[in-house]
Image 1: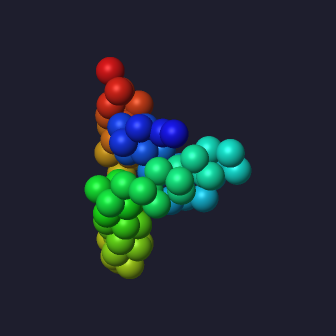
Image 2: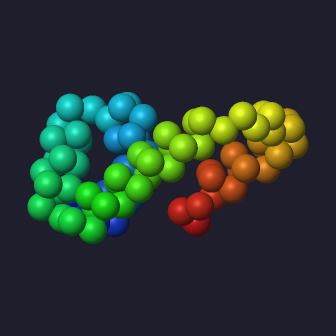
Length: 76
């Protein structure tokens, strides 16, 4: 079974629907038994849905590049 830490690392992939079948089953098994992770995933989905409703202009190319660089290095 996946750990809570692995759930937080895979939550975006789950929310985007890009997770493979086997990993999705393991993910769902964990969140069915772990209230904390279930709440985390629900909050992530709510955040994505809410942000998707905003009418903000797209970020500048410089801002986008800086954000992508930060996301690439978050595990370091």
